[in-house]
Length: 153
Image 1 (cartoon, rainbow, N blue to C red):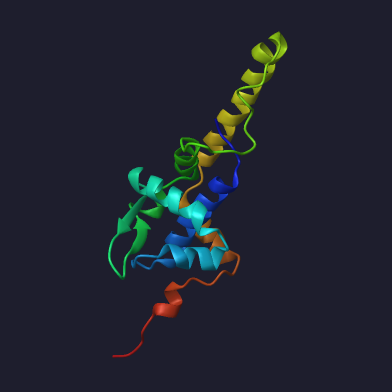
Image 2 (spheres, rainbow, N blue to C red):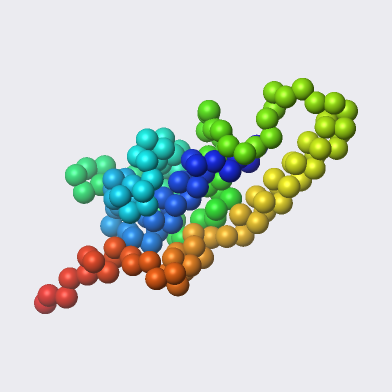
């Protein structure tokens, strides 16, 4: 079930941050938390799931961190949402499964809610990380890539 939770929003922010700020170099989780104000406890769980899902690549070592596992034009927000949806103990604005409902709820309301969620996922599948990094650029957000450029010869 799709749940619009903090964890989902933080996961999307983290992937966009990595795409926008990596410049081909690994991005450490603490850098993401500092730039985005995202609590590290949320990100640690999510990042490993994103690595296992093939969205991110984890690099070990002192200069390690995370990189995109493939081109940002081939990573979609819907993929990230599905990874977070599959996480245990995920809470958010989804429809509770354990609530007793009547025949109208079972036959009409829940199927309608599922249709809404399916439509939202289709929309999310149409938004790439490339598009979100372009939006960040247009919003005037400075990329850390520019801070790493060395013009010495």
